[in-house]
Amino acid sequence: MARLGILAGGGALPVALHAAHPDAFVVTFAGVAHQMGDAAPAFPFEKIGSLYGALRDSGVTDVVFAGALSRPPLDPEQFDPAMIALAPRLLAAMQRGDDAILRLVVETFEAEGFTVRGAHELLPGLTAKAGLFAGPEPTDADTQDAKRGFEILRETAPLDIGQGCVVAQGLCLGFETLQGTDAMLRFVAQTPDRLRARARGGVLVKTPKAGQDLRVDMPAVGPDTLRGAAAAGLNGVVITAGNVVVLEPAKLKAVAEELNLFLLVEGTAP
Amino acid sequence: MARLGILAGGGALPVALHAAHPDAFVVTFAGVAHQMGDAAPAFPFEKIGSLYGALRDSGVTDVVFAGALSRPPLDPEQFDPAMIALAPRLLAAMQRGDDAILRLVVETFEAEGFTVRGAHELLPGLTAKAGLFAGPEPTDADTQDAKRGFEILRETAPLDIGQGCVVAQGLCLGFETLQGTDAMLRFVAQTPDRLRARARGGVLVKTPKAGQDLRVDMPAVGPDTLRGAAAAGLNGVVITAGNVVVLEPAKLKAVAEELNLFLLVEGTAP
Image (cartoon, rainbow over all chains, first blue to last red; front, side):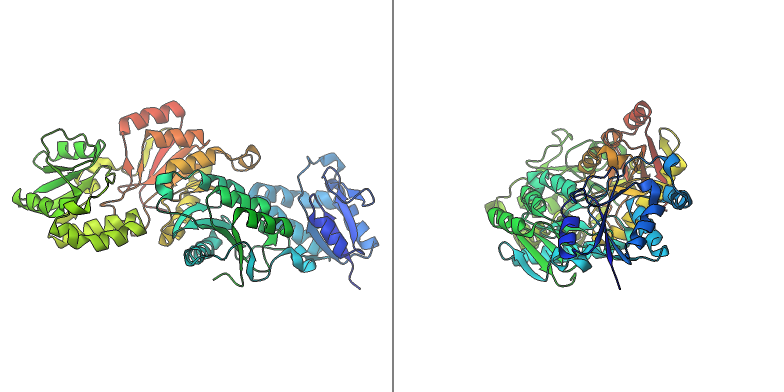
């Protein structure tokens, strides 16, 4: 019989997951902030072998990574044999970036016999269904801009650069890079008026890259995304159904009304 | 026998073109700043028919557009018949952006029987030959970053977004959009240290989009590009031979030495 293990980092997501799966076994990590209370055992990253053991002893078959994991400094003298064995590949992955680290973590847990699940599978309310999620109806121009945005993200997906872009009247005003969505929106907000005069309004489009492993890396939008989009002079935000996390949906809806911005959810990336 | 007409906007380029082609017929535009002196006739945009006439009367067969052309407000009451005939297509082009306007201008002059030439054909020193143009030798990491940058620009060229990007240790830190290269470099300069820690150094790569009409739209780099690249923490700038304007080459070389940044020119986009 399957039992879930929640490997909890910071933020509200692991708390929500635990509420939906109260019989799950929750672990946290030494040196990583979390909101899971004191009952959950905290494992040092250096002793990953003892984590495997604890999960198995508790009957855990499936694991989910949830919440923000900062990277505390590792003390090599504390490494257990499993961590020593992992170290060379971990070192190589760290030089290639977050994606590589996440892929390695997934592979490592799978090699230990665990099934790695995505938070969005275990908490369907985490993402949105197709339709207008919040705010006013998009105009035809907004719909055209969204279509162009999805085209840009689809064509650039193999390059593994980013999962968001801003399009206004067909013109690309922002393309997400390593710095993330909020930084891109701040950049768009600084667009000179003379350029904005021929690229008014516009939308933020956000969807996973093809091949992105949603179990450990999902795009997300929340109230702050809408605020950033409003500050950038956009009319709305467009995401895809089932694969983009919608953070604090009630607050997001209120912010959408307040700012008169829409959050539109496309059934499939057009 | 061919005679050149220089259609001069602002900046040093039309001056340099005239120095290289002293027998050319120079025209300027009413309301557009230029450095061509008072001898050159100034035509209002509203009377494009009279411009065609003056060019033909002077024996002009080939024209070159050179220098920055701001767009003064057009007065429809002053339109001559040629401009009235052009107006509907010009209006449509203005809604599609600068590229569309430039394409229309080229088509219009070609339809009038003129050969439209590129400034880079008439002034070979405007662009650079393959090799290290200025500054220190790039490292292997820089060369790898340049390769990735060219890959990104090649794959995104059909999307007609931008002609420059920044790559550091394989990670894309900036992708040029409507706001241009300098704005992108300012964006990269604001990258948080925690991200820069795993994407140190890096290069700006700049090359025309496939299909870009170099006769009216060329990428350019100059001393300010190097200063922007330095402020963004980059190691250098990489362009392609023959199709990227190098502004103020002597000053650029001095700035490259001062900032210890390279300008590398690739023979063909790798």
